[in-house]
Amino acid sequence: MIPQRKKPDLVSLEAVDFLIKQGVFASILTSIGLLFGLWLMNAAMNSRGLLSMLLPFIFTAVLVLQLWLILSELLRDGINQRKKRNAWLKNAQAGEVTICDSKWEYDMYGETDEDANIYELALKRSPEELAFWVRVSGKTYYRYRTLKTARIFSSRLDPDVFLLEGE
Image (cartoon, rainbow, N blue to C red; front, side, top):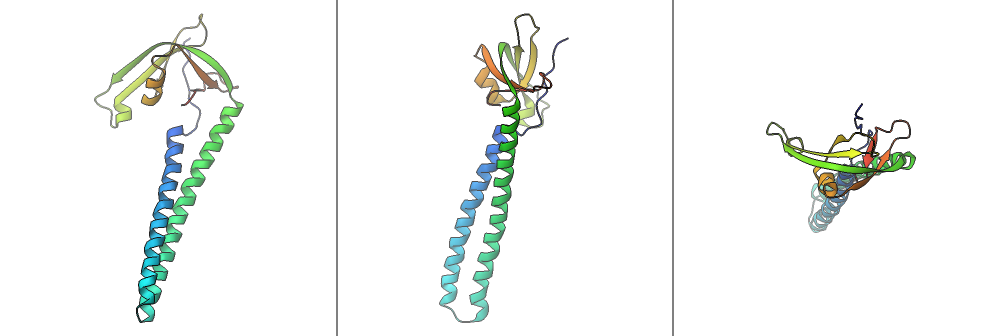
């Protein structure tokens, strides 16, 4: 029987890094909003009237609070996903597979670029086993297509659940 690969229920490294980058972007927006609010407060201090003085303070407080909540949520998600991934990798069994072949196909009915481009690698765990095809991302495909071996991390409970290194 030809083994079928199953991926662990983890978020990809690219997605985790994207969450963290979004958190950094939110912190930059928070800083810009805070500077704008401070500028408004400075203008309000030079004007007369209670409403014109309170409005910039309220605006700045709401903007900073909203962006801070977004930032903390994105960073928390990114860090939690990274911890979950590292815990799985720590408990996984490392091994090496032989890369026998690689192929790329284009599916014109794919809805997204990731669906339209199908990248696969043929892997063997040992010389006596049959090769099995594994679907990978474009980044992983271009990293491994010219190599002869790859390092994998497989589950101790089910060896068909594995990740290629860097995936």
